[in-house]
Image 1 (cartoon, rainbow, N blue to C red):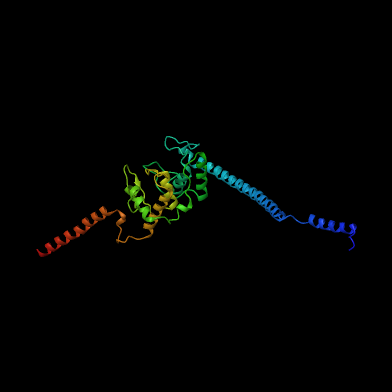
Image 2: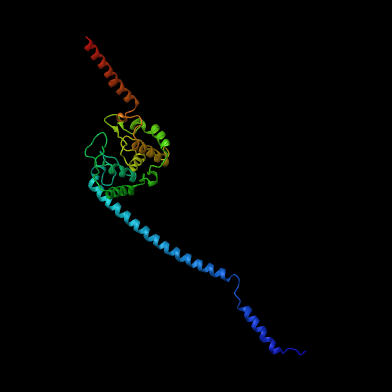
Length: 279
């Protein structure tokens, strides 16, 4: 057998080495995918951050515009009693720290501005548009922290009506009546009826304590508890009394008195008439 020519063997080895040197590493594909994902994620994060920053700047500008508008409305309509800086006066309390909820309730129900001094502010037609009420609330809220306007999830009337009825009887019925019909208080004051009142204003009244009403903060009644009370009030408002004529929902004592006066009165009158006729 003839030996191989060394000059013909060497090129074969060179070609094999070249093929081996050009082979891709097994982790190269993974590395490329990781680099691609990293670049894509970085670009997306940069884009979303820029967009979020622009949105936040726009919201901040809108909020500041609302605060400025609310300040003008306040100085034109409220400063006479509450002071130019809402610090209060001898005829009206300070509004620093009352929060947006108090303003939305008082102004949104027409109780403020008051037409005249009296035992308590009475509900009347609202003097401002919804946007103006919001601007006033934003301005007062910017002065100091306070109760904010409630979240919509507590106002949808989908809570536990039975639990709400229990909370209402314990905390509210002594003034507002067990059916929310309202009632008289001392010195010409009164607890207004709760029929026809919006869920937002009911919630705001609980957290701000307008007029003679105590404040029910989240330690007294939780936000969900307040939502349950609203559910109960809306339930009795939308469902008629199963007992017939409600007599103003004045309660069993008043209804019993009505029966004694008119029922027994009718019996006595009939007895007198029969006796007189027989004579």
